[in-house]
Every structure is written in structure tokens, then in C-alpha cells.
Image 1 (cartoon, rainbow, N blue to C red):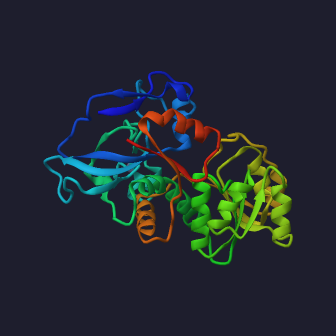
Image 2 (image 1 turned 90 degrees about the vertical axis):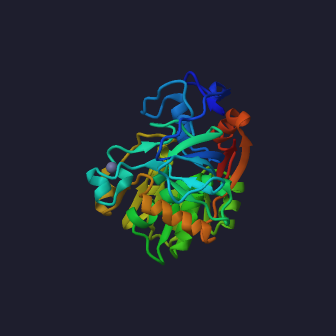
Image 3 (image 1 turned 180 degrees about the horizontal axis):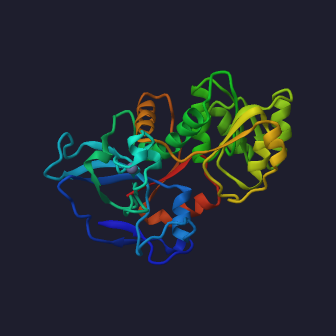
Length: 342
Ligand SMILES: [Zn+2]
């Protein structure tokens, strides 16, 4: 089969299309013919060796994908050849204390595609049948690949960790990104007023199309001051932050007393300045969040199928254009997700 691999860590140019062996199919596995695989910023970290995860080389990236069943192992029931499917991006162990507690996003022995198992930048992937789910006709392959992680992450941040309620005002940082545009939609679905930030007016126009009530261009206007002005000096109940760097502090300052900031990323700076005094005087809460549970993944895929959430695909490229897709992602030229169609 064809797959995109890299033999050494480095820039986008290390990604090469190669002929590799088809994956071996176990008795409990489904061989998935990949039709669409989404890119994540995490792919760049893995490629550059900045992820803090060791990888065997050469390696195949690709965390989330959808396609057709090419064949099934002898023990597999309920899935048949030719069926459209999507694949869970991470396989929890189902037996550790966190899995047993229903918080399988914190599993102690999870297997993630493109980290513990070669990923979906390939024509075929062999996946355990318990990770493979039928894909409703109302979702395209690209939407299924593009929607899984960002909407699950956004749902877990806003609903589970952030305890959003109808009537809240929510500040969504970098609403042009994958997680940002998903968080904007989940916040609107939950009945919140949304203030969206982005680095260009073009991205803010798209954010308004996705339902943002107010927008802030963080390259032109100060986020804290503008958000306070928009809320009559009161501040927002909840911040969705996933950028880090200077944006972390700017967003934190926009919180009302007893407000909550939920964070799931820090690509613009993983170590930030943190002033403890306003933090305790205002009883702010800073809450970590990591993707979401299997239950939440299935819920958001149902909501996408029902048309309540809309994955935005910026562009679909071929495997041969994987390096170009990484460049677009690194240069932040996209609004929504990039996908590869093997
Ligand atoms: Zn577990």
C-alpha cells in the first residue's frame, strides 16, 4: 500500500510517499481502506520530535480517519466489507482505574494512532473492531475525520470540565483553529453568548458565520480590555484557551470573579507568566482538559450526523501533498481542518 512516512525528524520535507507492506489483519481486527485522515498540530510535534512521545522510525502519522471496511478478521461480527466506518482516535485499555471510573480519556495504557500505532496517512489501517463504528450517510469521510478530535475536545472542555450553562458568556481563544471553531459551535449549542478571538479579520468573519456574537482581532486589539468592555466590565464566565503564550494571560484577565479558564494546549508557548494575586483574589479557576471520553466521542459524532455540529474542512489534499498540508498548518493559513485523501 501507499503511505506517508518519515525516516528522520525534521521539517515538512521529511514526509515521503512510499510503498510499504499492508498492515497484518488479526482475528479481532477490521482492515479499513482510509478515505480521509485529518491533520492535527500534534502531527507537527511528532514530526519534529517535540511531542515528548518517543517514536520508532520510519513512522506513519495520522490520528483520526474514516473510510470503508476492506475486510474483517474471523472473530468480527456486525461489520461487513464495503461498509462506511469511522475509527476511534485512541483505544482505552478498559481495565485501569480511570477506564473503570468512566474517565477513559485519562487511561493509563491507551493506544493512540500515530503514537503507539502507525496512523492514517496510508491507504489501509488494521484497527481492532471495538474501535470501528458505522459512519452515517449524512457525514462525509472528510467531516468524520475532521470532526472527531476537535469536537470531542471542545465538548469535554466546555461541558464536562467548564460546566457551561445557558446564558454564560464564553471567550473562545483562536476561533479560527480546529479546536476554536468547534468550541464556538458547542458554546452556541449550549446557549452561551460567544466572544471569539482570532489573528485576522478573515478568520473573524468566518467565526461570525459560525455564530460568534462578538469578535476580537488579537493582533490589533487587547483581548482583556476588549472582553471586559464587551461585558460591561464584568468579565466572562468561561474561557476556552488552547494557544498558550501571551494569549493565556490575556484571556485569563477577561474572567469575571469566580470564572473558569479551561486549557488544552500551548503551541504559542508552553510556559506562561502567571500572576498569583488576581488569581486568588478573584477566585479564578484554571482547569486542564485532555480530549474526551469514548462516550463523548460517540455523542459528538451523533451530533455531527444530526447536523447540530458542523466540522469545517479547509482543504482536502492527496497523500503526495502531505508536506504541503503540514506547511499550511504550520503557517496558520487555514480556518478549520486539513485532511488527506489517500
Ligand atoms: Zn485504561
